[in-house]
Length: 233
Image (cartoon, rainbow, N blue to C red; front, side):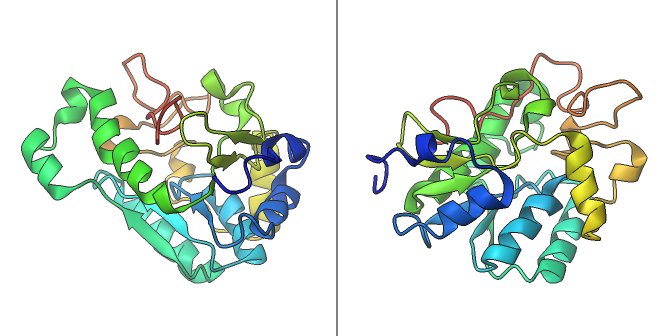
């Protein structure tokens, strides 16, 4: 893939936030070929604001699993208008696949990993095929597999550059940025949802719980799969 020989992941490993985004969005090998993948969740406004300030035409990929809270969809629409995002694309699972495998919409109860693959990983993998790099909102404080997250990395399977500009930010720094720039909070944040995913697989968290403790409650699962090795390809 263009630009991978010089290994920008290594060169940009000490950059973060706006500096990392500016380096990638303005680089000759990546300009116009970078997508921001956003859940429009509780912390998404910060990264969307940074990208909009640098290049509002940057494609934003929203994985519409068809299982989102209505508050998330309303938050998405508000941020798109407020930030002037020019190219927001909904990435959805194939209707034919859902009709064949999950016609009742209850696959998440039987096999959450397979549900995430069909509704998230597979559609995103297809949507990213035309991009040389993508931006994520993952952070180390979220724990689990994200604890040692690098700010820039190359996907082994595709050679695609993967940027995590907020990897080293704390939860307080993220919220501080949101407040400082007067960005709207996700409607569910005030109700104890510190991380928001699909409606059937997300709950509010209590005092002292980790920010992502409300994701896939009751089962041994901490990631949807789009950030696991080999996905998306």
